[in-house]
Image 1 (cartoon, rainbow, N blue to C red):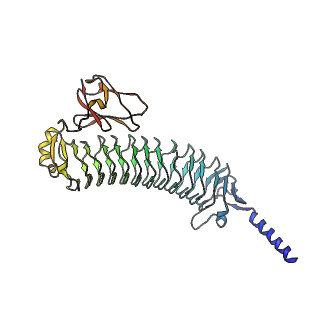
Image 2: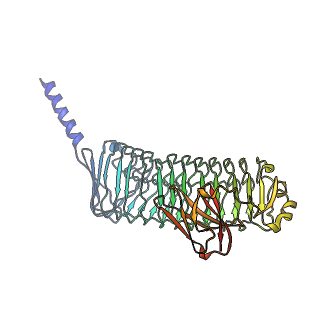
Length: 460
């Protein structure tokens, strides 16, 4: 009988111990009343001010029971979520962040692999380094409209996160911020000025990228190995496309480099094996080593006269090339390896009429299968029947009206007979008719291109 009573007593004590409430003082030096209370599986942070920060050698006080925490409630008077606060809380499924938190600290929720959603309130300004790193079950992130900085690795490894809206308040996306995430599309708002190195590296589900007009630099490897990226829109203020920025984007079929771009850095589009169409802006000066190496579907390209440098192996193994237009009056000095692995005898080189002799004598350039003057019948485009693009009038004096079976990614482009693109605009597939104001252009012949279809326009 005594044994039975003792057993029951021990059982009761164990239950009491398991359900016992634990409390810790966790305020920063200036917030001594901030406390954490663990009751059952819920951890509540209360008081006023900042939480302290922890680290790999200074664990949060609930570290030994972190796997019992399923819910975290952070009060409205708390102003920061401490670094490492919920690091490796692998059973955490629900988090409520108070409306005065301004910083989500370094590795605050790193490894919280059962967390499925998070709402970041409007008070938050900074999402710090690795804040949600390897939150592999995270499917929903709602960011408040005061976030300005998403620091490096903030959402790296969020493999279940397919969609996120970056608010217009964000100015900086840090290195590897969304690397290895499950994102399928991303719109970078105009407020963002810098996309950090490897920011979206290895996002293998990413198909669509739209980069806003505020971005000036696309960092090294920003979209490296985004193997399903098929639609890319670059903003009109990008000046640098960084080293390996789109390397391995093997589903990308076309890219328009805006006139703002000055530098296309090393290996920027290396291995984009489906890339059929590349339009270079009129201010590109630098095409780095291996920039378009391995673009085995690329059939033609025009090098604008702004280009002063083409790096070694820039067009290596571009084996489908048959037409190359170069608008530099004087041949650039280039390495023999710029077109390594390409049979130059299969390529016709088109240059300014007055430059034919100099290209015919210049190293590398003289080895192309034919050298012709721009303006020859087939110098820039092989013409398709005009009826494939319906437009009027032709010749045109003022307004050129175009009707077409528009696709969502159609771009209307207009080239002069020197191969310079003088007009480019992406079309909304819902429009019935598109109008170009030709009154601003000089008299002469122009080439109208929509996708793979072209037609000749006469401007009176």
